Image (cartoon, rainbow, N blue to C red; front, side, top):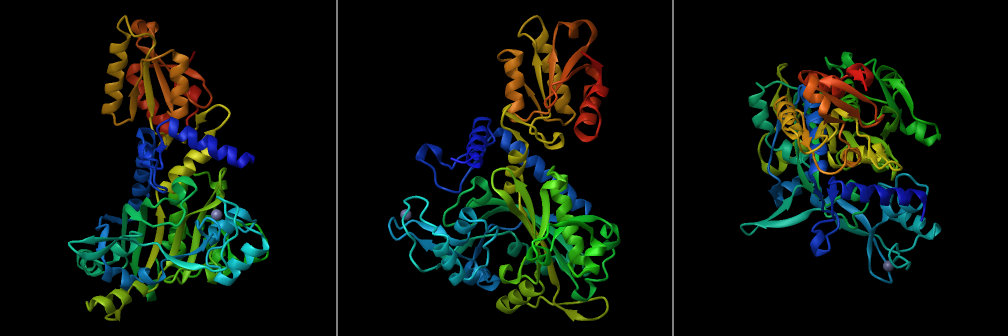
Length: 503
Ligand SMILES: [Zn+2]
C-alpha cells in the first residue's frame, strides 16, 4: 500500500476516533456508501466554517434565504437536470460493479481531470491504460452508460426529486426578491442546506457523499452592467492564484496575478464575474485554508456545465487526494430565468431603471461545507503526533478547562471558569478524567486550541495555566483576564508568550 493510502487510512481512523465524522452510516447496519454523521467535534468544526462563510457573504452584502429541499418534477425538467445531470458509468463485465468512468481515470492515471471527456475518449483511456475493476480486477464493458444523479421520491403521489444543488431552488422566487429589494439589480442572495446526488460509487469520504451541505451565493445582474460594477474597485488590485486554460495547455504553473492584470491578459471577462471569483477565494482563505494550497482553475470548453458561459473552480491541494475541486464560479447567463419563464409561463423579465425589459443573468459561487471541513482535517492533521492543528479561529473547542485533581475545591473553580467563558460565547469543555498528560493528548487530537489548568497555586493568586496545543508552551494568566487573552489568541496574530507570565 502506498504512503498516500496509509495517510488516508490514518486520517479517516483519527477522524472517527475523535468524534469528527462517523460512517458510512448507518454503521450498525453495515453502512450505506455516501452518508455520514458529524460527531460532536466535527459538527462544532463544520458550524464554525459555516459561520465564517455566512460572515463573508454578509460582508459582501448577500442575504441568506432558505428554500425547500423537495420540488416537483416540472422544476427539474425546466432546470435541465433530468436531461443533463448525468455521469458516465462503466460496468465491470465480471462482477457487474458500476463505476464512474471519469473518476476512475483520475484515480488510476496521471490525468488530473477527466470531467467532460467524451464517451469515446473515456473508453480509449480505459483501454490504453489497462484500467481494471477496482473490486475484482475484471475488464470493463466497452460501453459508457448515462447515469442520472437525481434522487427521486414522491409527495402525495406526485413525482418529486431531492434537490441536487441549492441553486435552482434559490432562483424560483426571483419575482419575490425583485419586489423585496425594491426593483433594483443586482440582487445578492445565498443559501446553505442539504442537497442529494445519487453518486454511482461514492468514495473519498465526505468529498463525494450522496447527501451533503451546499452553500451557494447567487447574484441576479443586468447583463449590460457586468462591466459597470461598483465593488470591482475593491478587488481589482487583489492577487489571485490563477490557473488559466492557456497556462494549463502550455504546462505552465498557475500564477499569482492581480485581477486587473488577469483581465488585461484576457483571462477573466467581466468586472462582476472577476469580483465573484475574488469573493470565492476570500471564502476559503477566511475558513482557514492556507493560501499556498489554493488555486483557481479555468474550465476548458468540454468541461463546462450545460448552463455555464464562464467557469473557474477553486481547488485545494489535499495531502490525501491531491488537487481537489471545492467550488465552482459560473456565469450562468439568462439560462435559468429564461427556462423557468418558459416552463412556468410566469413572466420573469423585469424592467430596469433605464426602462429596458431584460432577463437578468446569474453569477454563481457554488460550493458546500463538507469539502472545506474535510480539507481542514486533511491539511492540519499531524499524523506523527496524532494532533489536529486546526486554525485557532475555527477550532472545534476554543478551550478545555481542567482541575489538576478532582478534590480540594479545584473542580468548583474550574466549573466557574467554564461558565464564565461559556457566557462570553466561547466553545468550552470541562474535563476532569485521567492524568493531565492524557487530557492534553485527548484535546490535541480533537484540535482544542488551548487547555486551561486550575492547580493549587490558583487558590493562592487566582491564576491558571494556559497551554498552547501546537507549541505546548505554557503561561500563567489571571482568571479575570481569561476572556480577553483567549480572544487575543484565537482572533489575532498575538504571540503565545505575550499572553501571560512564563511558567
Ligand atoms: Zn469487477
